[in-house]
Image (cartoon, rainbow, N blue to C red; front, top):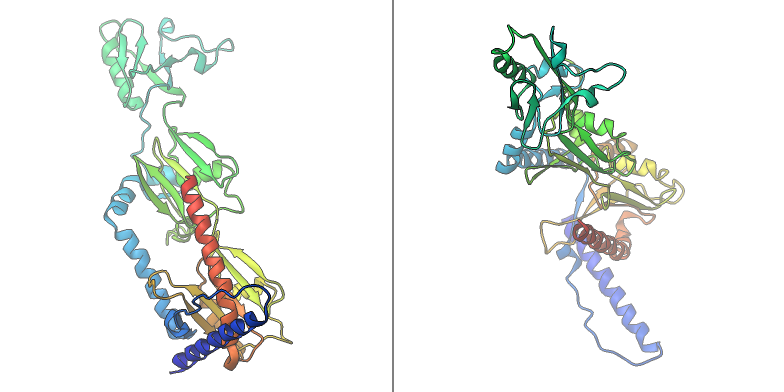
Amino acid sequence: MKNALIARLLGASLSLGALTGLAGCVFAPGGDIDYDTSAAPVDDIVDVEPITFGLIKAQARADAQARQAARGDGTQRELEQALTQELNSSTRAQLAPDYQYHVGPGDILNIVVYDHPELSLPTGSERSAQEAGNVVHADGTLFYPYIGRVQVSGKTLDEIRRVLGERLQPYLNEPQIDVKVAAFRSQKVRISGEVEQPGVQPINDVPLSLLDAIAAAGGMTGDADWHNVVLKRNGEETVISLYELLAQRNAATGEARDRLLKDGDVLYVPDVGTRKVFVMGEVDKSVSLPLGRSPISLTDAIAQAGGIKEDSADASGIFVVRRDREDPEKLATVYQLDARNTTALILGADFALKPQDVVYVTAAPVSRWNRVISQLLPTVSSIYYSTEIQDNLDTLGQ
């Protein structure tokens, strides 16, 4: 009932504004141009909801269901299973005991046959291990004395050691062989976007995880979007929330989960772009806050704007204007927090803001907020349109 009344007041306010504008045109110089000023009634394009404990719980359940639905997508789930292995960053060797490096073209191997120095190239001070090593050629083979070319690509070091021993058996009595990788050059991942040192990182005999790769790239920049990191593998893309990845801690160790990267993976860290919230009205300073890392609550946003002006703000008129993207017939939903009782700010602390939300603190009594909203909606619309244009430009630039 209250929402319908407020919406009708909004409609009346906009209609009055339109009539006033037309009256002004009578006295304005220049020709008279007829145009249609009719628009959808405000009560048809704007919903109004008070911020209550029940609303916060309902939104939390909806967000959890949305995340679960995203994880349940077939393509996403298959890619997750293919690229992920739960690792602990400090005990990786224990949690990934089956991990072994597989040699590939471009790698340089250091092969030593004990008691047979003629088969081991000198590796002293004159030559480095890379210079003295055996290069794996593009066809996956290397040349070794007595036995010629040996196929080693795709094999582990133990497998190569066994193959060499079998092939050398006719020439040597029980040869003792040691094989090591002098240079890891066949496998790599690429890190780009909002990291301090984007570039190529090699994969070696130690598993390379997502967190390790980002750390090796110098960490994320201040403009990085922690919620939409893109991992591309075999032409398929998956979006990873680094924030949730760090939040999903192992109950036993208290350490963050991690993900194992593979050869050819491309990791892209986007910037926050249009993932911002805007705070304006009767606050100490109007600000736009990036949603790059941690979520921002309504109370947190107001605090980062310097707090409300106690001498002019109406505590009952704290509004969050949120664009309705699911219903094309709706412009926005307006959430109202009545903070005349300061304990209501606890509700604001649990009300998570979303990208492009507009927080507005009014100076007018809530009974006359229709004038405020009628003036605010054009600003909100311009913000939405400008961010959509930026999104389209970013899409075309990719």
